[in-house]
Amino acid sequence: MQLRIVAMEEGKAPTINSIRVTNQSRCFPMRLLGFMLLFIGICIGFSIINMFKIRYLGTQNIISGAQTLIQSCFQESNSLQNWIEPPSTYMHTLDDSELFWRASFVPQIKDYPFKRSPKIAFMFLTRGPLPLAPLWERFFKGNEEFYTIYVHTMPSYRANFSTSSVFYQKQVPSQVVEWGMMSMCDAERRLLANALLDISNEWFVLLSEACIPLQKFSIIYHYISRSRFSFMGAFDEPGPYGRGRYDDKMLPEVNIDQWRKGSQWFESNRKLAVDIIKDLKYYPKFEQFCTPDCYVDEHYFPTMLTIESPYLLANRTLTYVDWSRGGAHPATFGKNDVTLEFFRKIQQHHTCVYNNQPTSVCFLFARKFAPNALDILLQNSAQFFGY
Image (cartoon, rainbow, N blue to C red; front, top):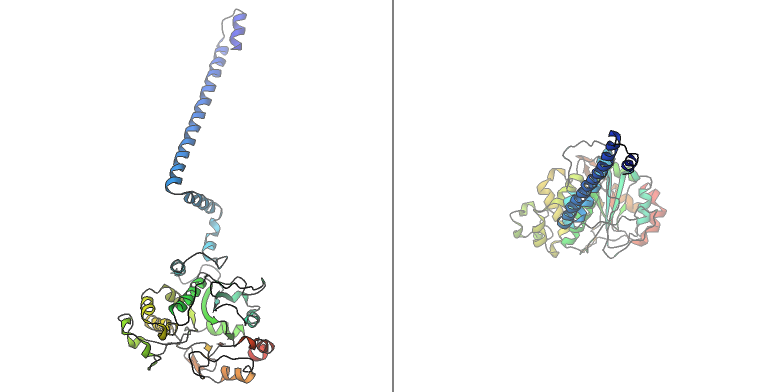
């Protein structure tokens, strides 16, 4: 406007340059206005799309999508690590069906494309405290690369281990367990499933709070890792405490010739551990027809695995138990029972088969030991067990 006024005051006709500047000054605001309208239109469009996603898909999908995009941009080189890293904490909100489903994932290629140190998962099925924990601490010391620990207690129990303990924060989500009931097998499957989430776990040992290790760690590790079989008792016992517990309603899944009995305390390789937690065929039969007098924990796994994978079973347990005193429970050993001669009888006075060869090393663990035996066990562990 100022250029036009100057030209009129001087009585001169407007020049081409003055006209061009005037036209540019008019066009620039129009272009700016166009860009602003386009930007506003795009923003409104995105707002409508996001409102639709929030209303029908939920905000979590949007957030998850953003997180996935970020992870794919910045963590693509570490994507395998996300699959092979064990859970950062044992506590989770999965129910049993979700846990078993997740734990049943099995790689179909045998060779691992990363360095893997196979470990033994020591699974403690307890009511609460671990009174013999100090002995286990000594046993585990210096072998951190070759073991993991899982503890299943009653849900109300809260352990108070120090942060330096190997048992610190090793509890898994648990449920109430009743002796002789299917809930006992449920707890064992729960322990297996939680341990299977760590892909480095290759062997799984079920223990109680009254168990102790009879050999030093290196001997136990080599014995288990070099075995071609898993150590689970599965024998056909005639009479009232074997076949006498069988119910014809188990048919057709289980007939009496397939009915087996074995110790609750077992060692399993990874394949059999997956077979146990994924089972849907035999579980309903045992849950319904192996009632309290049947003692389902002595029959379910031995029978199922004898039917499905008999060639993988050593048909014996690694845990020494004394039933010679009779009754529904094995003998408990207190401080007066713990002597060098006592352990020599367990460790040397037996014969069994290991990888189809005879051996006198038949038991790696023993139970039941009372809490009052702990001091003597600690004082003499080097002499008794070599650790």
